[in-house]
Image 1 (tube, rainbow, N blue to C red):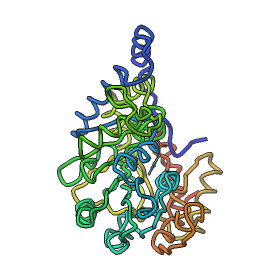
Image 2: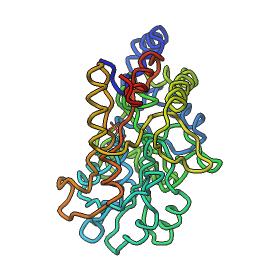
Image 3: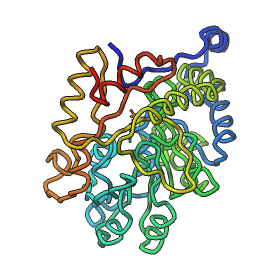
Amino acid sequence: MISVTKPYLPSRKKLESYIDKIYERNWLTNNGPLVQELTDRLEDYLSVKNLLLVNNGTSALNIAYAALGCIEDLENKYQALTTPFTFVATSSSLRWDGLSPVYCDINENDWCVESKQVEESITPNTAVIVPVHVFGNSCDCVKLDEIAKKNDVPIIYDAAHAFGVNHKGKNILSYGDASTLSFHATKLFHSIEGGAVVFKSKESHEIANSLINFGFDIGGEIARVGTNAKMNEFQAAMALCNLDEIDLITESREEAWNYYYESLSLYYQVQQKDTDNNYSYFPVLLNSEEELIVIINELKNRNIVARRYFSPSLNTTNVYGNDFISCPISEKISKRIICLPLFVGITKEIQSIVVNVLKGIN
Ligand SMILES: *Cc1c(COP(=O)(O)O)cnc(C)c1O
């Protein structure tokens, strides 16, 4: 079975050399030397400051909400303005913390949340704005940051798909009060499980650093209610190996991405101006849900899995809150998108089978 994603495995020899050192030191977690090295190297690679490594991308969101005070006054400030067109973790992390997602519809072209909708949805009950750079395409960050600032509401970007993306001359993680990353095995860059938060302010980073370690401050005093969301040394070792190979990973994905793009003429996500493509996904917009089902089945008959991303539109489930909010564009688009298999090592042979199915050639 060919899946839509395949975790990248870096040089085993290199990984073993890191593991040998872990064995020598017998330091497995609690801000170990590899976690520190990874923090420095990622800050350098991404040109950001105040990066905090955590155990996964969902924790990254939860830690960001807490560090920025978004769950301090749930009685009055309990709404989170967010997109329905995303992976479930964006909404579930909000709900997990007692926040109610208020869904703002997406833009028909770039599939990210429509900034005008966000602006119109702000109320005195708004605790946070959580847009998503869906498939690595940038939100309208400048506008959204402006809206957040004007209304004095924190803004946290779920940048799980946007590793290594620059937008308007700076790294996309520099926008907002914080941005979160996922380093899950299936993501472009991974630490098996893992994630990070990049904070605008040093103070928020410091609070978050305490939150991921049971609420202890640097002096070891219990400063606040915390949790355990630390990254461990084995995760950091895997990520360091992957970071060494990130150019190869990106180039290989770019080649596969371009092969699809040049072979097919379908509807695609419109890239924001001045934004890099990190080739993390290859989503295509089909004409109808019926067509999508036919294509998924045709691919399945050839042992190839293409996945629906993201379906259903989260506003149509009643899991994350009671109020149904209509988001016609997201509802329409989420019925018609599939992501084609894209990973390092995918062969032209497999890609051409996918292309032929999409072209209706059997
Ligand atoms: C993968 C993903 C997450 C969750 O990250 P995990 O590391 O799997 O917890 C959150 N948001 C989006 C948009 C994602 O794609």
